[in-house]
Length: 302
Ligand code: PLP
Figure: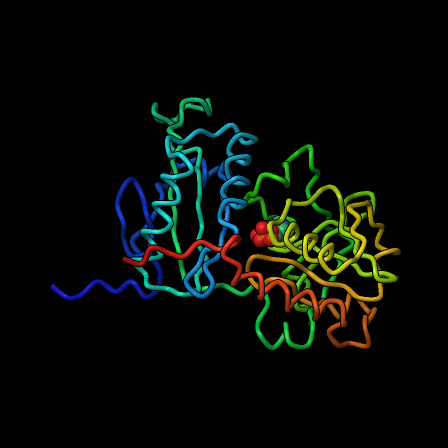
């Protein structure tokens, strides 16, 4: 028998560890048929999980908000995550925990309470939301006027989810019109977030980020801590697009890339089209904090 190839990634499903290519959920799982699923993503950098308890705490809250229940405790989940990353050998990795509504115990049942909720996890090599060359010059965002972020009282954006219909439409138009990515407004014209990232503005040395209609990003939280540590005022508030476009600097935050400069929104160019100084300082601190043992947990590779 040949050696198993773990290089594409590793999954844990129903108590078994397998190469990512073998991991699958049944076609009748409500996670697939109704996007009835929640997930989270933590990253491993230089062989260490960053802020793992923040991510797992958010995942537990998402489970509660979605009324999903899985038998795994926080420690069980951690054991699974250590085991799959150790098996992969990845030093830098994108690590996902997922809980799906599952399959109905009685075929064809339309009652979500009949479904067997299930937890699974997987890891792949580190994923960057924005390509390296785009991060180096700053992201150019497209703001559609015909697609809005799904209403928060329809799908709660604070429970991390796969309802990406709005983002996907925005992304397709963004790519077709030469932009790197998309940023969605809500129906009232307030800035929300993009597919996989929160957004911030810097104005007169203070930092602002949307207060509602967005995921409570862990990188968003870390960025606010960094801003405070740099002596900057931080405000979570409503940000109409017109106000956002008056910023001195803009940046995005994401587990898949950290703090990333935004240099263009629509036709408007920011910080002369280069990465702003406040953003640069925050990026430096973000990566420095990965070496802080209070924020990082070494992967148990053995
Ligand atoms: N907003 C959305 C919709 C996301 O999917 C994500 C991450 O995937 C974020 C924001 C950023 O959150 P985090 O910093 O926890 O990665």
